[in-house]
Amino acid sequence: MRRLFLIAALGCVALPVSAQNNGPFSVADTGRSYGRLKDAVSALNGGDGTIRIAPGRYADCAVVESGRVAFVAATPGAAIFDGGICEGKATLVLRGQSARVEGLVFTHTTVPDGNGAGIRIEKGDLTVVNAMFLDGQCGILSASDPAGRISIDHSTFAGLGKHPDGNGAHALYIGRYGSLSVTNSRFERGTGGHYLKSRAPRISITDSSFDDSRGRDTNYMIDLPDGATGRIAGNSFLNGTGKENHSAFIAVTAEDRQNSSAGLVIEQNRAWLAPGFRWSTVFVGDWSHEALVVRGNDLAKGITTIEQR
Image 1 (cartoon, rainbow, N blue to C red):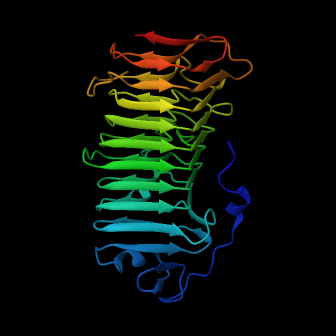
Image 2 (image 1 turned 90 degrees about the vertical axis):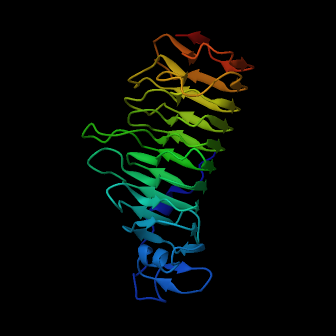
């Protein structure tokens, strides 16, 4: 799968942070611009709006309490949030009705408790398109909102998981949200935990890649600890040799049977092993003991299709 953004974009020089009407954060509806991201959010007065972000590297962060807010890079891949954290949680802390994040890069999102994130979604719907989450703890971390929906498309999660101090979480961790959709996205170079962990009862994970060849201390590629229905299809998986847990690629209901997994479809995926991988492993580790549909997957020699546990 091609890389979504030129890595050279990460070397952009920040634009000068100036006074109102001459800053890098502009409200599309009014045309006014601001020197700080939180000021642009405040200018929406709790309502709806789009904030356009100029190319640059910023240590800003913001909290959204209400409304429907979009954060859109003027040039995809060239607006980089580097280390900014609000409320000890994330660069963007979102609890409005809905949010859209498009074309942004988040990096170095670390906090002492290990749960630093580019985006912390606590309430409402979230759509993420063409974003990158690099070299932090979590890319996206959610609270629980059973009525909410999360959709991620054409995005990259790389170098995420445990911090060198031992704290950390997962590249993508979704709590008890209503549904999760991930399409055309890339997960790679994990530093601990799972690449994708979701407690949502409905999932769709398609046409994405999970490359663990340079991972270290990693666990499952996809973990559905409470079970889920939906579809995992058209993805590619490469299991690396630096894993902490090498027993399965996909885990279903490994913790608590909160959701039905009956009819979960896992099909037309491809999985293989990095040179030097010497352990027994299975493609699907199933703790649910329900009727999963596992079919048409292209598995390398040494990978058992499914095992009930």
